[in-house]
Amino acid sequence: MNGIRTRFAPSPTGSMHIGNLRTAFYAYALAKHNNGDFILRIEDTEKKREKEGGVEDIQRLLKVFNIKWDELYIQS
Image 1 (cartoon, one colour):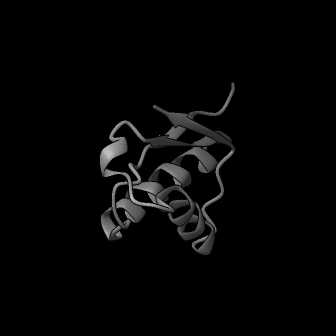
Image 2 (tube, one colour; image 1 turned 90 degrees about the vertical axis):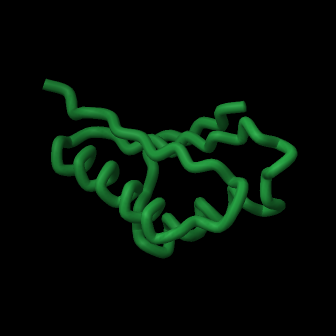
């Protein structure tokens, strides 16, 4: 049986908060517990509201907490 795939889809329109981080952690832990993949899908559908450096901030914060994605998608 293949592992499950989970995803975390933040929007780079502001700073991540503890709720975002909790959601990412749960999705990551569920995927890894089941030998699956954790997907980071950036939802940049609101270009006017996008924070400069927002994508990089999301990636940096996930790395700080050792949440490593297996795949990265940008959803525009």
